[in-house]
Amino acid sequence: MGSREERHRLNHDLVPLAALISRELRNEKMEKPTVRYGCAAQSKKGEDYYLMMTGCQRVQGNPSSTFSVFAIFDGHNGTAAAVFSRDHLLNHVLGAIPCGLGRDEWLHALPRALVAGFVKTDKEFQRQTSGTTATFVIVDRWTVTVASVGDSRCILDTQGGAVSELTVDHRLEENAEERERVTASGGEVGRLSIFGGAEIGPLRCWPGGLCLSRSIGDMDVGEFIVPIPFVKQVKVIPCFSFLFLLSFKPS
Image (cartoon, rainbow, N blue to C red; front, side, top):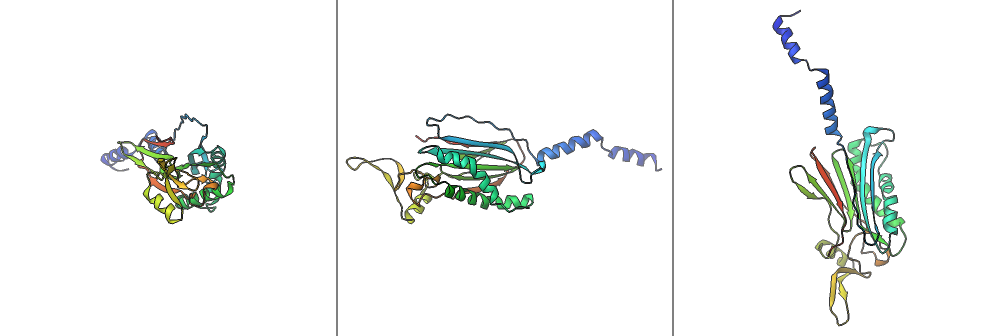
């Protein structure tokens, strides 16, 4: 039976059932964070749309494969491109991921699938004048994957005050690399000329006069405006964090 000291040591090492359950719940919460979300909008032209879905599943019927999707689409020259992207982009992204992948393989394939989904959405949208920015975020546990075209932004604010921009603005005024890409492809970058030769406003791509160098739609402005997104994937340290998706009209 053992000595009294051994029995005392064994009893001391035992962990109460309630404590074990509490520990498992904490571990589960760390593995799969709680996602809370909301939105606020003030659109002058009514061309901005968003997408918020928290019940998506990598494997249908398997709750442990759940992931969330958040997106913002800032349309211009009408709402058609923004609405089409909101309704079809997610399916095109998921359709580009091979079936039967485990979670790690799925996350590894996701950036390339996002590029393919953006390109397919742009190709299937055939209206000539409407276009949209797109900032598209997939949150799978603590892994955040962002793809974006245009100047809508995604900003990560983690506990402790660390702020990270997860997108790159594709505005010709601010992005020298995009200006170089457009001109190297044969496009022209310049400001709007008015009577007398004066130039006003932000830098634009000609023909078409669009301020952005990447978007979905905008078929009428030539091949210099591309739908290939900037993609970034980060793993967030388990903590209380904010993820902001923003679209704004610069002054």
